[in-house]
Image (cartoon, rainbow, N blue to C red):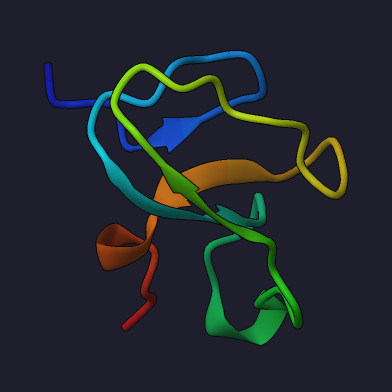
Amino acid sequence: MGEQTEFEEGQRAPNPGVYTEVGEARSFHTEIQHPKSIKMKKGDMFPETTNKNRKWKKVEKARVH
């Protein structure tokens, strides 16, 4: 099994860094226009996302190619 890369509200950040919202469809056609970004420390709890279908993902891994 691999490392978890998407996180929901209430989960704890595994590593420090900047996390941003991603939508449920990972296509560039459905990118979020103005996603929330947050700076987290290891162990901080993730806050609510803008809508229930979104999750948090570390910025380095949130890009779509």
